[in-house]
Image (cartoon, rainbow, N blue to C red; front, side, top):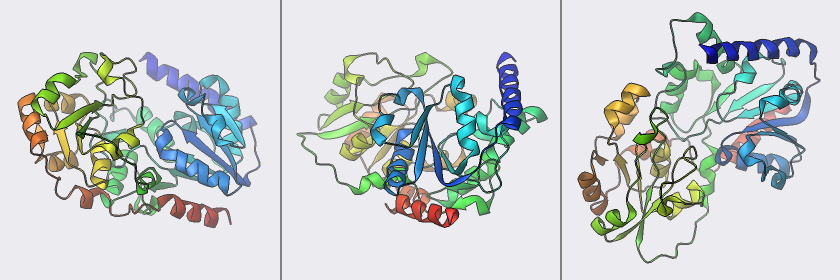
Length: 356
């Protein structure tokens, strides 16, 4: 109840300020929200190279790197900078977002502004948005609050028709909102990363269980490698688990580098399984808490379709699947119809047409 009330107060304040903050839209002014670096970094760099006035509204965790982009302007995403954020939004011709931003639901959108959602995953196995089990769909005020944010978006980047269906039911998007040009975050995989290794690599990249910290189970490296002697185990924990339980999980390389290096990927309900499919690598689903996760967060029909094979409910099954690893059938076809490694280029072409 307190959380809902705080949201209401915040949005009311933004609406009041929105009345007084006017801005003239500049066709060369582009704002990029950055909560998930991998999704927008290639877009930011390309836009800057094209001499657009790029402003980055960034998550505080990127405080030390945003200056490297040499953007026109940078603004911290913390609430205390909301005046600067609103002023910037009001004069932007193009806005690129990578997730849900409550701020947008309270701003009057300029008529000649275009908002593009990259999202922060190659696909989705978990339910979110209006399908999230924590959303009270019987409360019209809460539903309207979400829809006000969702309807601020004009276009969604998609890599498959399945993702278009998910955006439809989760974010109330329409077919005309879909840009079928693929996802810039996957363009990076066009570059081959050199591999200097003695053993095959298994990457374990689990999602985050926010409902119970004790449910975030790690794999014991020594035990794993004893049971899978051909492999070296690398664990990349979710960013929300900033303090690893042991020295073996303190992996600092970025997830896309690790995905490129890995021979086999172990995950669970994470969309990283879909990203691995783009690389045509075996994916093993280690889902020791499937029923509980579904009851707390919700899993969609595509999850159950994808996990008919290569699914382990316990360590014994996991070791067996790793030692006999096989490529998952149909996953690439399901999720990567429009991903071809040139998505950033196609997005820039679309933006050029929009700004005229």
